[in-house]
Length: 167
Image (cartoon, rainbow, N blue to C red; front, side, top):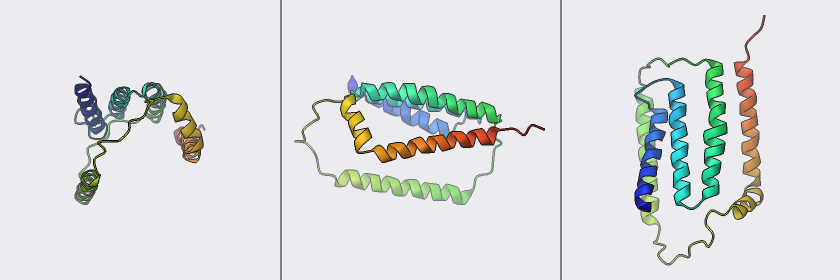
């Protein structure tokens, strides 16, 4: 049953992630934001399967809740309309396909070149919050602070971009 749930959540994550970028149903940015919410919820399901319940809850509460509300607020504030269909840039499409193929080849060669870990010891506590917090605020303190400053700069930028001139 756990394998079936993994494949369902993985397929939903990939499908919804694809629909965020290339949505054939609508060119409306709100639709893409809703598919992003579904992607985040599917990823939370994968975290639950890994027994990382805290990460799953944070994924849903922070990203699907707060961040998506911020995204939708920006979309509504900027009054984005449906984007017009543009002509495809053939060089960009070809470069994208070559890049994805190269990354896929590197990924496959890394997987095939990794030795089997049949006798590896599994962690004793899966998904515990205390080791996660300790690691986040000791080993990864600088990246954590950089991300917080980037989010602050992004919010200030959105406010400045959405500010209308009052005459």
